[in-house]
Amino acid sequence: MSLHPAVAAVRRGVRRSLVDLEPGSTVVVACSGGADSLALLAATVFEARPASLRVVGATVDHGLQAGSAARAEHVVAQMAALGADETLTARVHVEGGGLGTEAAARRARYAVLEQVAEHTQAVTVLLGHTRDDQAETVLLGLTRGSGGRALAGMRRSFNRYRRPLLDVTRDDTVTACQVEGIEFWDDPHNHDHGFTRVRVRETVLPMLERELGPGVAVALARTADQVRDDVDLLDDLAEADWARLRTDAGSLPADGTAQLPAPVRRRVLRLAALAAGSPASELFHDHVLALDALLTDWHGQKWIDLPGHLRGRRTAGELVFSRRPQE
Image 1 (cartoon, one colour):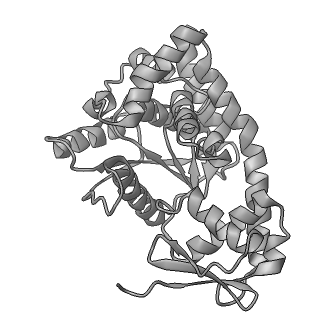
Image 2 (image 1 turned 180 degrees about the vertical axis):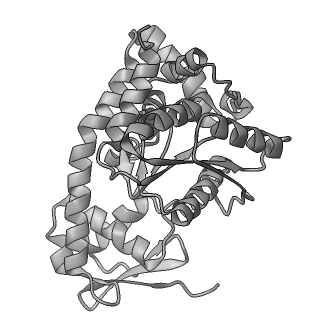
């Protein structure tokens, strides 16, 4: 009996993601209990056996819905039944801290996954984002004017994390679960139009497919792949220039920084602001442009106020960052 194409697609994505791992390595799979993550876990267990890899399933209870603890327990049982060598769960308290619910939950989730990876000495953590998630991310970035990094979408890998399913559709993960007899959870939050991403998923993308023809999601994901290499190169150049130009105090030479090409220079300025303590979630392009003006359109401006109670100021030929006085 031939392998169902949906199951084959998921396993192929996982196989490519694991091919460089040494036998005996530990892999963590982040699992919410939805179709994407359960299909990912099942495929990882299947592909791990011939590669002699150890698979740890991890689920995070965000405590945002009634019955979430029981749901997490059910996911743990599912992960064990699917063949995970070890299962872990953790409950987190989601605090906004100026972030929306989605962003705060994501931050808490990644904090747990980092702890799990450290505890299990995992070489990588697998995330179940699909091509549909990628298309939504790119479209959101376009509408927000978030620049090249947003157009590049989600990275296939970063730090210890990997996304094996970025070439796999959400329909394929659902079908793979159905074919393999895996019961999955359809999170009500995935249909709550109070979340922007849900409106993009259920209203905007279907409308674009209907009005422009099929293939919009594929085209958006392909755009991300085409842009990502360029963005990564610019980021690498900026990292190198930031390391070369910065002083021990975190300041930058005004003239030397001003001579950098604009795309690199603005990335360097962002890195400098982040290093000084400005929160990434609050540091916007307008802030970076204002810093840039201190270098390229200098006419005696006093300072630029930045998120994180910081100020950027040009003084004595340097761009320096300092704490804002308490008002």
